[in-house]
Length: 114
Image (cartoon, rainbow, N blue to C red; front, side, top):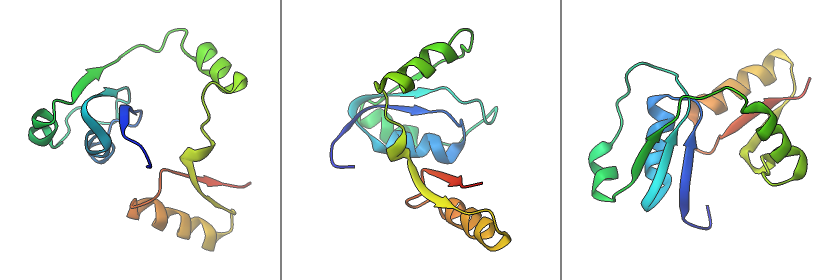
């Protein structure tokens, strides 16, 4: 990523995304679990604990969208780098997009151009 990650946000709440967040976050950093994808997860807690990565859970949705939209509108948050792949909407392109997403190695956000 070119720099250490101080804080990671897992907005999906899946074992794979939480594991990625824990691995990507620097020693002494924080991972914020926002997504509620599953009731239970299998994640590498031992390595995260050894690196003293803090895990914080958030369950609050009330009145958060206006602030997020303002951050996006004002440019305080740039989400464009998170879109790693774009595909058209033909059958072949949709299948390819799902294959890229399933591999997950370098896919963060896979988008369709409609």
